[in-house]
Length: 234
Image: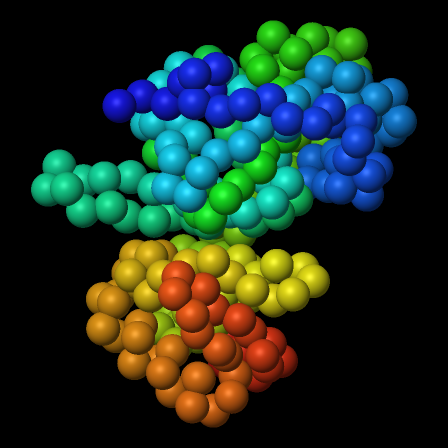
């Protein structure tokens, strides 16, 4: 079933209630005040329940989103019914701009991971802000370039690095900036590094025994991120 924002979520407190430090993240990190004010005036905060679809692959491009709290899982389902997870988007990150820029349908399914709040710009507001503030387009291009660089790094890592190093790198990438907690299952992490849940679980158990991480249901807390960084670097 296709996700429809208007029928599935409720508008909550206005964007102006957000601290400037929260709004000025992702593509808005270095945005001038005029762009920040335009986004604050047009955006809305929306809430999704755990597992609720934000949008579906093939949906028309309707909005540009930032994660305020919770996570968003980006994935595709194969013809055989297997879900492949491409990314888990955390707090402060924007997503969904590609389809708004080229006008083509969504390329992935997006699901809330945990109770999730999003900051949302609809397509009309997105186009208006970029038309009125051309510097905003430059900021979005920078974001896209940064993601391409990450994608190239992942492709190189997948070809060369051992699976445990790839796992460590992905966990560090997904970790929250403040509390080092990643909302992800062993199966989802396995999809991201192209290994089985059993293989991933074996390494996670070893890391937990070593005191590097602490696991709970669909959650991994990084207790020793330095050790994971050393492993990721090889």
